[in-house]
Image (cartoon, rainbow over all chains, first blue to last red; front, side, top):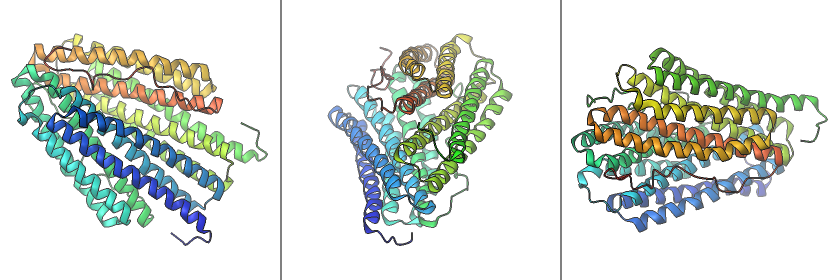
Length: 238
Length: 238
């Protein structure tokens, strides 16, 4: 971006970045707490995670308000305007990631009292780790305005999708073998789906970093998508 | 809104409304086609629905581009700016509704070849009808700038949530009774969840209409939420 004559304007633009960065840090912590709560069946940690989502929502509202004030006051040129709109989009993806992680924490609360084999939850544990690493990497890329790192995250979403497809099929198999755990496995299915969607939002952020850094919109299709919606996941043939 | 001296500016604001209205019409048709395809196991209609989501995405990009151009060129005052940002939010909710309906269409394709009892899919059929009516009503409220109608939609989301909770529990029961249909029922579970989320986005639109018409942000909590994430949906006790 070109240097601005008005220093106060730079400070206002930097405040948007700072709010986004705070949202990112909170979303990362929320995802980690929700995942640990799910693995350790820890309802207190889950409750803490559910609560912390409110802070992310508040930050997003502040980000939107500040952005609108800045546009109204400074009347930025088209380039700066696109930059501001892109930061708003990143904020919106972080807010959605917070929502999805909160939903995982709620499911952790629901299954906390259940005594179930660890094997059931192992797949979701692997997904959580991968989703958390992706989110950390994309936030690092955002902080460092590092396009190469953002693009590495973008490409790696393929692994998370592949893992989701395998966890999905595994959970269906568990349910067929023991109908008594269908309720529990349904929570895990939706939890795994949430992690896959967190991956999608992380990828959106990577695309927006690419645009912020290079000024070019990424038009390539993503490497791969969740294919369980179109899979013939019927009668155990999957 | 106060009258504008520049008529071209009014025309540009009206174009944003027109793009949003086109998106709404397409989202409504897509949801209808996806639901009929699911009920009638019609893979051709499902494929048509999947395709039509692209048009909604294209319209949203045009809406965003036009909004940014308008802000850059006209440098609107804070009130108009908030109006434009609100229309962008409505566009974003319509785009998400299109995505969720497309996912239902994909699931309709996946289960099209299966011969399953009609009873299984009846609950999702009722949800589809209610979600479609809510979407139609909110689009009517948007076109007519009718706050009372928007608020009626906002309150009625409670019924869709209640119906979702009942369909969710019913599907779990079907799965426990016959593990061979677990794969199929999983598609229906995710499909029902998509309809519940379409209801949430419809409610967001109602809130934004309230803001557009009255200038006030709706701060009340929504009447009720999906409670299946926190329900102890374990071991068939639900």
